[in-house]
Each structure stands twice: as C-alpha cells, then as structure tokens.
Image 1 (cartoon, protein in one colour):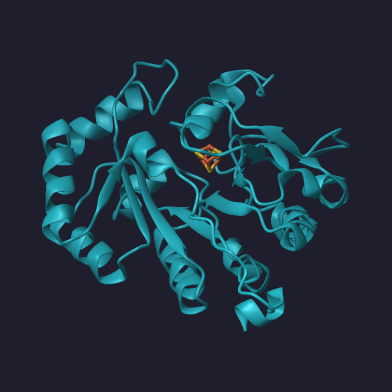
Image 2: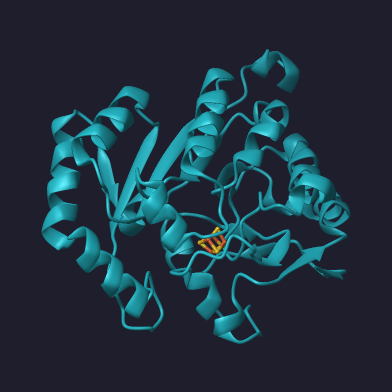
Length: 278
Ligand code: SF4
C-alpha cells in the first residue's frame, strides 16, 4: 500500500454524482482492493495506473482526517458523497481509521452525508454516523448469490456480512440504502425480492447489468458474457426482477435516479447534537 499526503480531501462533485444533487465528493483512498471486475472507477482520470491493474493496489491519504478537520467548514450543510472513486471501508481502513477520522471531523458541520460502500466495516462507525442529522449509508448488495459475487467481486466481502452490517446500522437508527447495483445475475429472484421486502431499505436502487465489451461501464467483457450465458440471465430477467420488487411494495430507483442525498433535517431548536441522537 502506498501512502501519500494530499492537498485536499473534498472535491467538487462532477458527472452523475453532481446531477444527483451532491456538491462534494470525498475519497480517503485512491484505488481499491475489492477488485470488482466491472468497476467504473478504473476508467476515470484519477486512476493513473493501467486499467488491468485495478484492484491490486490502494493508496492511502494519510493526512485525510487532518485535512477534513481544516476543510470541513466549506461543506457544512451541503451534500457530500463518500466515496466516488474508491471504497471508504476497504481492508486498509480497519487499521488506518481515515474514513472514521473524516466522519468525526464532519460531525460539527452537519453535511448531508451519503456513504457508499461494500464494506461491512462501516458498522464499526455506527456511533459516529448516528451523530449526523442527515445521513444515509448505501451498501452495495448486487446479487443473492455468493457464486456470482465471487466471480464479479472476487476480493469484496461476502454478501452475508453486508447484510449483517445493514441490520446493525438499521438497529442503531442509521438510514440504510441497498444498492443492487449493478444488478448481477440473481439465482433466486423470488427469495431475494422477499428478503429485500422484509428489510425494506430506506432507498432501494437497481441498475441493469450490461456487458460493454471491455469499455467504460459496468462490464467484464468475456467474463460477463460467459457468466450471463451460464446462469441464463438477461435484460428480461432484470426487468422481471424489478417488477417483482415493485410487486412486493418496494419503490425501486433505477440507475442514476437512485443516487441522491438524504433530505435536509433541521436541528431541533434548543437541542445539541448529542441530544438529537440520544
Ligand atoms: S468496491 Fe467500489 S471502488 Fe472498489 S472495486 Fe468495487 S466498485 Fe470499484
């Protein structure tokens, strides 16, 4: 793992994140060792290494928390997306505490915070997350199948651990989104839909998986084609799955439509932050 000192920790949001209503992005790391084979971040200009090396390296911004301490006032009350080109809860975070340090620095300034992660480690920071008035933790759970997960996200945490994390966050009162994105082949559509309906996330996002033939996007080229053929999953199956979710009474946001900040929440008059979350 490389270590760097960064000049800034909050960047103006661009692209679909800006269109979704976010003002800022925050990336404590560059690169990501979860190694999702469809990851769009591999194709972004922030990745200065060969696309083929994506998933094999991560660089930590060692001064991330100190920078956040200085720069957090400029994002006060605004929508912040953490993170856009990395996963803020990848293995290195367990010992580096960079994401946690940023959260602690942000609390006094109360941005409208969205965490986007595949890492169950996010549950470690439940105590800090509870101190935000406007927050949502989006956990990516793109399939019900470990067999599929291992093929597409070989080094990311098992699905069961992600479900454990969303339950723990929910139990602590932290709003939780579930991102079935990109929607990978599903083995038991009825069972997965029932599971999602029972959990009833605060926001549910799906996004059709497509093979973009090795170009930018949710794509794995040959690997995607082989697996999609093997499990017999295609656009009609995706549509039927989304319809099934709607049939369970769930509101499904598709693709970019699902990436929006949590609503603004005003502080209750005369109450401090600790009172708000007690
Ligand atoms: S966890 Fe996110 S940033 Fe990391 S490889 Fe997967 S999609 Fe990319």
